[in-house]
Length: 145
Image (cartoon, rainbow, N blue to C red):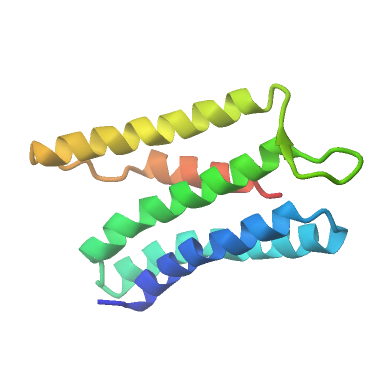
């Protein structure tokens, strides 16, 4: 069922291609628009969970989509921030040491997702902790383009 919290989560997923497109272009206004959009999308991460708990509308779909939306957004922004433009305006290329922390973050996300999937098969529930919520908040703030 598509409740308001689930729609907010889906809006984060659908905003990712727009964020990537805006980060791809070198115009200064695109970066400003991207930053505003990124902030709005980041705030929805808080509100979807808050509204779901406040309205008593926590759903399996929301529990499934929320971490996926976070990971998609973080991965897309990381990759786009790692890309740098050549002086002549060619397509972005990935270079330098910025790839190391990005890879660490992405690999950690993939490992945690794999562990959760493995434990789900064993019928072991791993609830999202407050520390994980803070980690996501810090990631979203730190990646603010």
